[in-house]
Length: 97
Ligand code: FES
Image 1 (cartoon, rainbow, N blue to C red):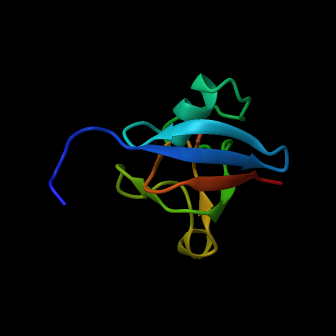
Image 2 (image 1 turned 90 degrees about the vertical axis):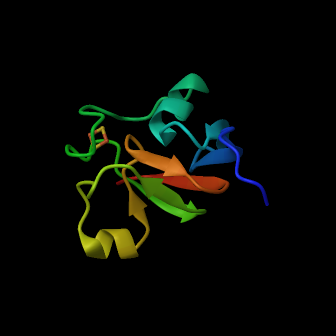
């Protein structure tokens, strides 16, 4: 496969409401959700306050910051911070409790 700088478009979905949004590989999930008209809680937008905390039920994400404000257990359990997470595949998020 040849390397390309074109961003990939994945499908995002949120639970429990089942809304979908365009998830571009080159922008954060929070930004994509907002562009898609979804309301998602956020505050700091830089991976520290955990307001946007959610569970990744399907798919994979990557981070550009060293270590988002998640414990390693949370990471292993699939929790993510959408304000700093970029999709690597189609994704399904569940709002945090
Ligand atoms: S909005 Fe603060 S961690 Fe995501």
